[in-house]
Length: 100
Image (cartoon, rainbow, N blue to C red; front, side, top):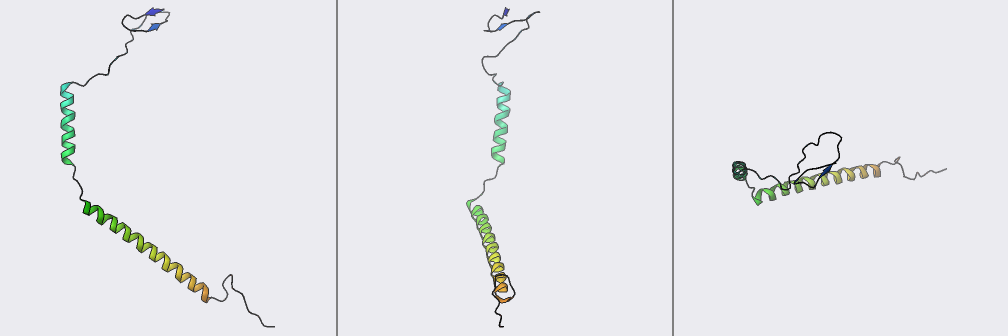
């Protein structure tokens, strides 16, 4: 059994103990890396375009109108189909009057 000084690790090996290190703190980025990350964030922030509330409202209004139009079209189609079934005397579900 082998112990590594400075670390609370015990290793059992048959050969030579290999060096094992576990960093206790997370590595901090260098100042140059931090500056580059900050610049990239500023460029991204300045390059985004904010949308107006008007455009969102218009977009929602168009979507709503298209849904209403689809519903009206569907209702009209169903109504026409019902009328066709009502006019057809041989349709399923109709009683046939027979005189004998």
